[in-house]
Length: 114
Length: 113
Image (cartoon, rainbow over all chains, first blue to last red; front, side, top):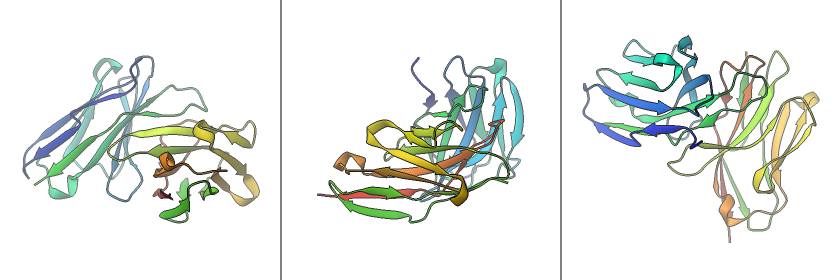
């Protein structure tokens, strides 16, 4: 068990470009979450998956954002037509389903849109 | 709805002094509560969690927190601060189905030599 892995760790992109981030959860975890964290703020919920099903999306997640978790394993978060306001740390976490269990976080992908 | 309020965005203590980081929560159902720590450019690491067992919870690195339902609080303490405790600390709440975790805005702890 190597923990939650996120790639890339850093991404600099020009405004208007598309970017994709990958998250590999802890192997036996069936829940996977995406959060966004901006400077000086706590993580904000974006979306979560139960196995391959995306069960909830935050209103923060505009139509430019899409997330997938094919086969209930790794997940990708794509941002289309990036804007400067998308600059943030994108955190992925995974957990088991049973009550009382914590979320294990990856080290995040820091996105800078220039 | 669930929410978390962390009082004090910055806390500064001297090395060896008591650390007290405050967290109040709002939840319409019995909550699960967590404290996470984040070092610069890193993800979040769990310090401790409350899951309706003992109200006084002990975590890693000498931290502990007490769940007080009457005060809707879950404050984090450590008797003696170390320089290595300097980081940002986040309180979080989740409810029974764990569909999401709600985080506070964080408290940056500075430890002075």
